[in-house]
Image (cartoon, rainbow, N blue to C red; front, side, top):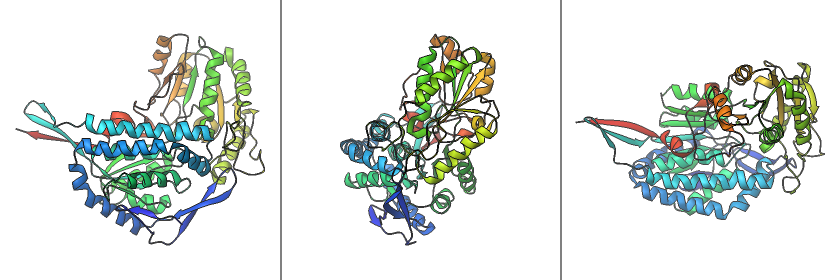
Length: 468
């Protein structure tokens, strides 16, 4: 069994218990990590608290050098890390390499740059000097769907800002976080600056969120779990950043290139087997084009070959666990019970082994159905008709979430006009590329705060004013 990383060393958990790591494509146990205890969290937080004065006083350029060295080492090991992620959570190897490993390496490299670039002695405002200082000890609680990217979206800016960190990676897919801890150790990050305690959310996660010596907690996961984290954090009035669920709408206006919009929309909905909080899981199409859009979606879905993540032909890997597969299947069944038409996929055991679900498309989806309102977190696309732009905006805004979305139109101006009316944190215009420097986060029950780029760094900085 692996160990915890505390105060610059690998140490056993006081619990003695462990969690099996299962390859979702083969259903085989491939590793075992500690099921940490509240006592382990105490040790890690104490190490982070002791390291904070020196790390926060370290010159920003020096902090940046540590992060840059880690980013370079991660990039040099990208193929090995990607293989680990493909085994750990089932992403096809090409996705594990480009999206799950190289993109996070770029995020870490950017925070290495921002550590120095954003350093400032303060600025004057009237008779005041405005300063930005590190928030303190940060508890980072991360999910399994992007097991390295989500870690670096928190750890990168926290370390760049001068904070120290206690990380709890998901026990479902923890191995990428272990690879990162090894990298931080090899580049000589001072003991206690980065600590990692693996284990279950109700034990380790809750101990971090409620710990009186944790100054800030940053959580990514379900809205339900986010509420619990926020409630625990409120007991000590600590800073909270939450990146939660989504039910994003892909609004295709009548003037758009329908074929291109549908193809891109299906690809976005099925990326990472649909296990993406910002996935465009609702495709909104004008009634005059609805039948054609359904036909095109079914054609696109048929190209998503299920199989071994290491087979180059595979476009859709397994879901991360049997629990997640069963959850998705329940939603597929519920969609049919509520009257939606299953026009593609829906099968839950297309291969002899592995937690696979076929790429699934629903037509005849009405606002208010469970599959239209609730986050499924699987390869399930709902196609919803509308009759006017106003109705499309109402449908798009008609869920508790507001994380992402897309708008397609003949002109950028037309698309932007609709995009500005969507109550959501990010909107893709006519297939624009994801920008890892732009702020990522949501409105409503999709969370609090932003990640990535300078906006992500700001989350880990307190603001102080000195009056003269």
